[in-house]
Image 1 (cartoon, rainbow, N blue to C red):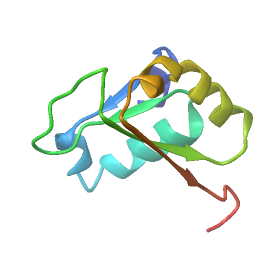
Image 2 (cartoon, helix red, strand yellow):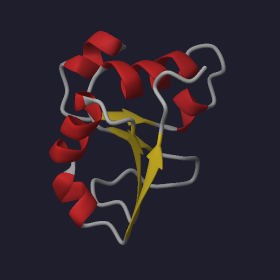
Image 3 (tube, rainbow, N blue to C red):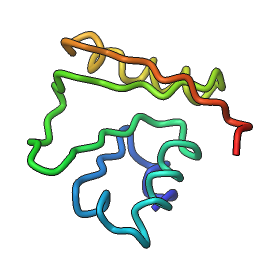
Length: 92
């Protein structure tokens, strides 16, 4: 999955993958921390769209986070609400 995510501008993770306890966490972790690309998470009951109303940015001050935000600026600018969660990349 990481290899596929590296070849795309955006990784979309849907409910089936979110609920898969074996593969889901690996894909989510790899997409978020190893690709440097934005990730769109579509929860159960939501419709996938490239114009989301609410956006959560995971920020860890690395170059990859900066690149992801820069690549997602159009998506962020169109959202009603953008929240930033600070993530410590060295925390366990």
